[in-house]
Amino acid sequence: MYKALIRPLLFCFDPERVHYFSLWSLELLLKIPLVRSITQKTFTISDKKLERNLFGLTFKNPVGLAAGFDKNGKNIQTLTALGFGFIEVGTITPKAQPGNPKKRLFRLIDDAGIINRMGINNEGAHACAETLKKTKKEIIIGGNIGKNTETKNEDASSDYIENFNVLHEYVDYFVLNVSCPNVSNFTKLQDVAFLETLIPKLKEINSKKTKPKPILIKISPDLSTEQLDETINLVLDQNLDGIIATNTTTSRKNLNTSSFRLNKIGNGGLSGLPLTNQSTEVIRYIAKKTNKKIPIIGVGGIMNENDAMEKLEAGASLLQIYTGFIYNGPSLIKNINKKILSCT
Image 1 (cartoon, rainbow, N blue to C red):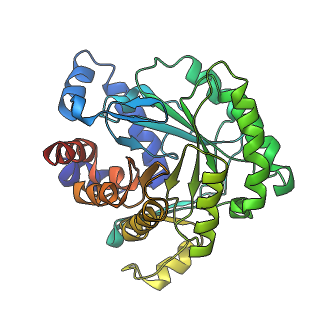
Image 2: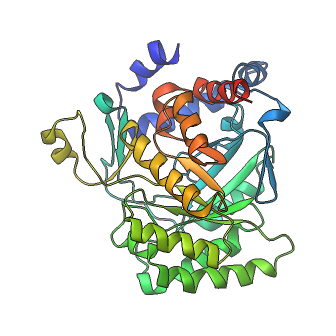
């Protein structure tokens, strides 16, 4: 029903506006007596065989929602009803910021992809913390953190540290986003020298907390082999808890969308089907290079249950979806979990 009726209607409207309208509408629907219960029964699969224990956390199933969909953590209870095993909020910055000028979100329907240059628009760490404080805890929540656009790279550590302190009590794990392609000079934060300075500071703060939280890093799919090796060594040397592979890509190779339209859209990170194989190969490389010593959350172009299985077989322990969720609806979560069960 989603692909036949709902998606064609939603795709008639501006992507960013319809995103917020859809979440608002779903939230209203789930307040109707019995609708939430019916929705949960329709899309949720509860089975002990789906549980995954990672980073000292127990995930009720391995299919999560990637960062960027619920930037401020306002829709966690709504999205939980759709069967996710965990939800990652953010990217969060210390101060609220509007992001890049609109229009900044574009569908590539012929490629089952999305280009975004949102620019990390969010309400800030303190507002997010207040929201999460009031959220009924039914699911594992990740906190994806970054720096404010106006913050110079040499001062970026202070932004990550502030985010870490403000959100620590309210999230179950942290993700250092140093690979967003939609903010000027942001990807330079992937440099090992910066991370070698930042990570020990976060780990020291973490060790003094009553309940230390896992710390992961999210990487770009566009890293060279040399850069990927440096990142792997960093994760091992710094004893980070895992890698999220991958963020969106700046590549525009082998697309069906015309060059004219791509030039008109301009820059931004590409997600969805065009990213599927590239992301999977990064996962496979990390798993093989480390003999699966580093836990990996696989994300990027999971459009169906077979894409999900390929990422698990490549070495991912958990999965995240975003663009596949937009193109295929909430049944994707259930279909992936059903496929995983059928293969166990």
